[in-house]
Image (cartoon, rainbow, N blue to C red):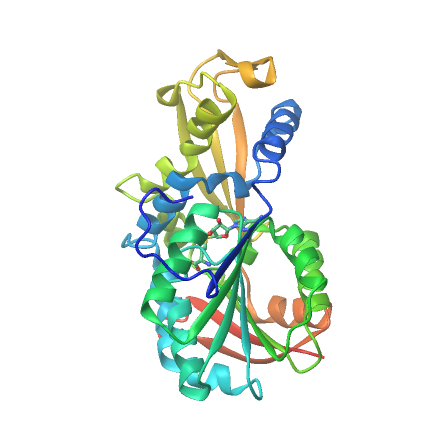
Length: 335
Ligand SMILES: C[S@@+](CC[C@H](N)C(=O)[O-])C[C@H]1O[C@@H](n2cnc3c(N)ncnc32)[C@H](O)[C@@H]1O
């Protein structure tokens, strides 16, 4: 939970179901053990987002090289009313991987121009981001209620499937979809489709394929914030699992693979070294130059998006681009 809570809000307006807290470190421990045992070594991107990682991501969104947030914000500023007009009647807003929910405000405001009250259901693995963003939203908009799920996407969707909702507009912003490989993206959208009804809609933000130099700059910013975000996974393992990673003995490495259509992100060992993780009772050897794969960020074109929609129970009704045509927001209708 966030240490500084911006406001006291009434319990009737704010419920948080903390599914992560039920097994605080179990997932991290098992996945880190498995990932360090794999060849090549790998971590899952969801472990970037502890309290510090979530705040580092917010800093990334302010970087001049990281055009994604500004481009998506531009689209939402321009088209929010059109987006919310695509769902009829009193609408519930659901958001997967909501983070700080800063851009969500544009959709909330558009919905509140159409209806007097709103139920917002954010789902995010980061309980700290969820708690602080929900409190800030509740302070800004007295007309909303928040029912939040601190959970992995799939666990959150499994919970949501057990409950009934009316007309729903779902959001998956920030190109969060980019972290999934193609099979996982299909699995995720099908699971999300299961909790929606015919006539509900999903607004899907996806970063577009573009010049390799622009993409590589976005993941290798001059200030080194993305490097800090990446290396924070090692710091998290030190903090939560008793590791002794020397962060200065590793470096961030990111490049665009045109063939795979994705930015690949790694942590590279600068020398041969052995790391102890007492919480797991293991020691792990690294060769000089050995890499841990921490994230992929797949880039899309409009054909990929239409195909994804068609294979997961949606139809792509409309896609909006920013003026630089760098980022896409697609309205997918549940059919
Ligand atoms: C790239 S950030 C984007 C945040 C926000 N949607 C935006 O556009 O600024 C990804 C968000 O998804 C959350 N997240 C990442 N992996 C997740 C997972 N497997 N399950 C639930 N949330 C996840 C992170 O905590 C983070 O808030």
